[in-house]
Image (cartoon, rainbow, N blue to C red; front, side):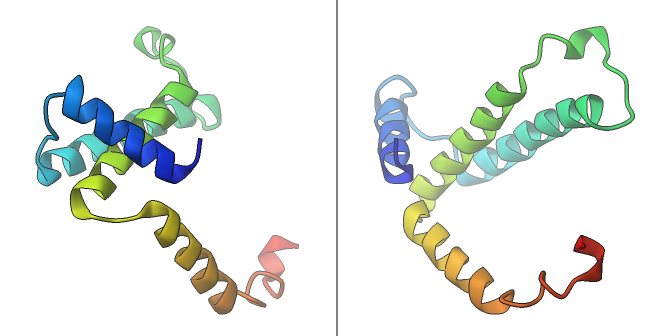
Length: 108
């Protein structure tokens, strides 16, 4: 599945099963919530926190998919073509960081 197809599939699902998009502000709040849920799993899996019993049923890949889903919703709502945006972002980072990371002593 391409990013463009994912955007189209989310849009189709929202317009049928989901009835309509939540407002952009609501979706921004939901995105923040979903990122927090992912952060919780990451902190317990890779960080120093221990799992609570309620955390054990959480699935990292599902939480990542939730984050992506809401991001796709926001892109659709605001007219952002994420494929184009990502391509431009690669170009920006490549131009800006051509030598930056190679010269970073902290990364060696």
